[in-house]
Length: 418
Image (cartoon, rainbow, N blue to C red; front, side, top):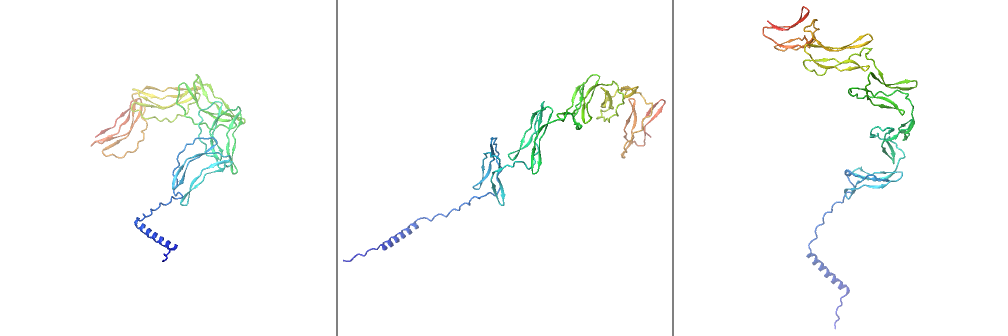
């Protein structure tokens, strides 16, 4: 009996591997090919290359013992992301220094915010003072102007306030003064005040004087000495007093001080004993047209002082002329001879004044220039300006003239003659 060949372990393994290989080849041929790989997006930039957007507005309010850290833009995953503000508890002797985005070469880099030590004193002068609203005056009080104070390493504005006055004292405002490399505060304080000024007052302020007020006298403003300093007292109205005039006070130097000689009502002279001042330059307003006369301004004596009366227009009166008034000395006084309308003579008894100069005229074809002349109107000579006359063929112009006839002067009008 023949013995059967035995399959060795190695043979069995080879047979199994061969069968498996054939099976794998057959499976691959049956499946479709895999799709091509998709391109992967580039990773977001690790840092920004452009400045962050404008910061958002926040309204944190006030929180005692805390510091508000304002919100900011942060760079996250290639985009700007807003981080809202927050409160930080204050730290003694420290000040919060806000971070910032800073450009460095081609990128923006975040400089982190942090707590820094506070300088105990300022090294730069304070900002300009702010405008303070004090309101109207407050009796018995002194207004203390606002000022800058150094707090927690920053300039902080302290608003003004009222302080109650102290008898015999005046407020001396403090100030920041440079000492070496720092600015130190010279504290404000109440100091004793002198009872009298030793220097003359400042120049008077320009005040807009109001118009006349019947039955009242305007008292100009002046400087007064109060609590060791000059204080301006604004002008005011005083009711008139019959037979009195106001004499303004003044500061007079007496020894080493200035003393106030008070203003007072004085009896005034009914008539002036000195001549009036020189007349002021009076410029008439726009002409009122024909039949009006300009009355020059003049000085008048009122309540013991000279008062200027402005010029004015008066409507003419038929057959009348205006006679200007004048001040005339009589014994120890000056009396006013009043102006008035008076009957005008029908003709002049004196020759006219010298002709007024007129500018030269350029020739005008077909016309003749007739120079101006004086005419007699309402009892006085009035200048009539020159004019153009149209030329007449075969005729010549004869100028008018004033001619004496008996006790009068008569005007012979100009005319064309052959």
